Amino acid sequence: MKGSVRICLLLLAIGGVVHAQTFKTPIQHVIIVVQENRTPDNLFQDPTLLSNGADIQKAPSNAAGIALGSCWDIGHGHGSWNTELLDQQNGRGFCDDNVGGPAGCDPLACSPDTYVSDPAIQPYWKLAETNGFANYMFQTNEGPSFLAHQFLFGGSSAPVAYPTLLYNHFASENMLNPANSNEAGCIAPSGQQTKDIDANGEEDFDYSYNGMLGYPCYDHGTLTDLVTANHLSWRWYGFSKPGSIWNAPNAISHVCVPSNGNCTRSDWKNVDLKDTDIFADIPNCKLANVSWVIPDGSYSDHPGGLREGGPDWVASIVSLVGNSNGACDNGKGYWNDTAILITWDDWGGFYDHVPPYEQLIGCVNPTFGCGYVAGFRVPLIVVSAYTPAGYISGHCTPSTNGQNNAEVCLNNKPPYWHDFGSILNFTEYVMGLPQGGISKTGPAWFFDDYWAQDYYKSGTPGCTQQLCPYGLSDFFNFGAAPVAFTPVQALTYHTAQDFINLVGGQPEDPDNETP
Image (cartoon, rainbow, N blue to C red; front, side, top):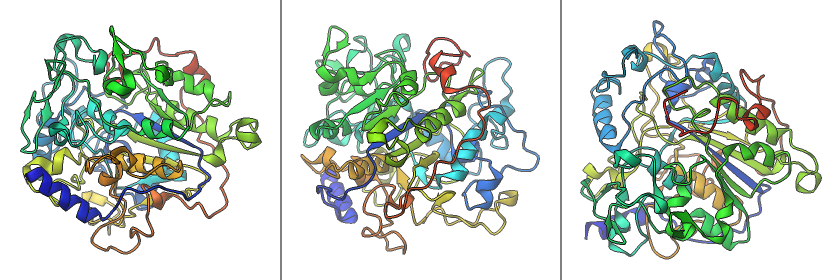
């Protein structure tokens, strides 16, 4: 009964309906780049962004900057989310419960008073300064990578679609079998498990697949269903193991069609298990309409090891699009018809001063966090020829520019806020797909635009539903002439060809802590 009431409340609050989109945009390609485990406060201590209105809690003057990969893996499961939210509310940093790092790891490397200031970070700062940056982008789920990638692929981590009983549960943790901790999806070994969370906020093994309790093989709609049905192309560039927790398509049974430990669906060829192929596909005019790109561990931003190539890795993709061959797309090249959305899959346990926006708003059961959403803030950079240079979504003007951490931005009521669903809804819109189409068979309130907070519901001026009809709409002005590509600053360590040559060794897990 509670679930039914909650669905009604959310649909009434949203006031949206599932409808087809017919507006023609110039965008023919969307590239969704997903990096690992950072918050805006941790990663974007950029003086230029700060002075331009980025809501970043400025590092104290005595803060010691850290290298991009120098900290151990801070807890970021759902249990850590709850603990660290309490830490935040009590004015403490998220590392207070993680002081037992590995031998030789400096505990101060995880202090809320230390921030990334490694020179390797400069390509990210340049991209944010010259394109669009979101002040209020939140991971949709309250937990780690496996679920975050499910939300980015299909708008949910629920095991099943509405109206099946478990549609209002969410898979809530990474894998729990230590022997196979990074093996996931419908081709995971038997005995693999992950917990789901119910409407009372209780985690257990409620979902069963072919008699296997907690087995991580689910079935509900995904964005790729809409893309394929509308005769468009998609590609998932990811880690080289088919059973990786970062390989989201493998956990949806109708996308994978598992048999004898392999995914066998005819279009499984769209799942490219060599992430560096994106660096060849762009110059060879093979870019799909919708692409997800997940770097392997050598170039992810996950802490641990000697990772510093992530910013170069992302900047290489942007540079290839910006300088693409004029032979692509009927001689136009990719720059004028491509949107690149760069985000991070979860907060990674790092400190951020902005509380999750949805934790107590409109909840039937407040302890549930409105159905396992939303999680902590993560960065989002939007790159396109139709994004005003230097645009900051949810502009913030603190009276002291963040000096001495004296933030006065009204970050609990920003004019624009976004989550992973915003990315899916944006893609639906610009590709001419049915908005909300993932959930068109039922209310299934946890999907894409129903959790994409793209217009502030209380009537805040500037982004009504009419002015902001689709996810991330404040970043784009499709009525303006396309702007020229702004080159990213000289890369610090690697070029696209280096990544094609697999500099740094063979692919590895995005959070494997070996360098």
